Length: 408
Length: 129
Image (tube, chains in turn orange, yellow):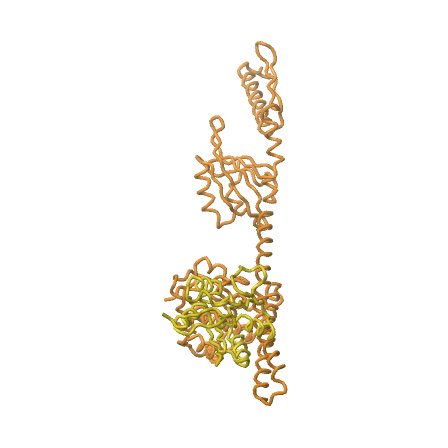
């Protein structure tokens, strides 16, 4: 005989049903599926509408171009809008419930943790990159505001995509560099052109005079200026090739010590004019695989730089083996380089001093340091006013590098 | 007997300085040379004053603009006329000079400017005090 269901059991099932219904209603409210509630009471049914208050805000937040997040105090994303998920190139359900820290670059993790901590009680903002699943970085500004919601404390976060602004800034910077380059290139070409024109003017006057030696000297000097202009133009073409990755290398194994001492011989006249004495410490038998022409060009550029910016000071040139690396150091005792300038001197058309103080295309260290000539650069701060030491590191087999270190 | 005008050339490019010197010496001018503004001020402090200064602008140590400022502040030097030999563009910082010649300059332009401005009969105190 089937036992009759007890009233207690019946009551329990009814309560369970109501509880489930209430939970479903709450979920629907949380999910934005409910715009109004009808509540029955002693005075009849009353309608509570959500459309008047929350709905417009929800629509607004969903249609924003900025990313919007509500973040728990421990940095978990409780809610985010579609714009934020789109910034991350992920579906919404792969974002909500995850930590915000999962979507920023590893170099920003400490800064983000600090930002969230401060965001518990203050409005704070910072710029940092979000990272897509493909590893693409998106520059953003992240603004955090503490929000008190009934008994819950959350952090309201607005994320603004800065990539368009960055692109504009980069385009403006490219235009500035191009204008500066045209100005410098024009200046640098005008001086040898003047010299060439004056030699040609002199030759016109000298023709017919019975001094062939003087004629010959002026022709040679005119040719020298034409060569100088050709060299300048070739450097400009090198820059274009480096920038577009079309610089072709002819790699072979060379004796670095032999190359360095050869260059010092070639440059000795220039050094004498600059009153710079070389102090050489060259370890024999160090070989490196490089494009000899580019390698020589890079070393000449670095040494010329020392002659240019530290005239009257000795220049120590040291080549040593350090483990598997060959290290070339060019260490002058000139004015040093401002820390701010250190960051940019390996860029194109950059000089540490102002353009009114110095001639030159500002290309020497750019060509010396570009990765296409198999040189890699590590820059460190140099002691202000104590000269510059340039380190060129070359693993014995392949690959080189150049670093700036404090002069001792 | 007339003294040939004395020109001070302030130019950091050795090749250009050399050919300008050859041209001016051939034309009978006296010439002295300094490779930057600082060296020029040192030279002017200890030697006979020139009739004309040919001044480059972009130079290490002391550029042409700073040299000109220093020259104008020194009553002994202020009246020496200055012809600028500039490789900078039209939009560069202006400079107070009797003439600005833009490089590349021809032999004719150079000689014409030197002749015109080195004959000015400014009273000069030629000896350093």
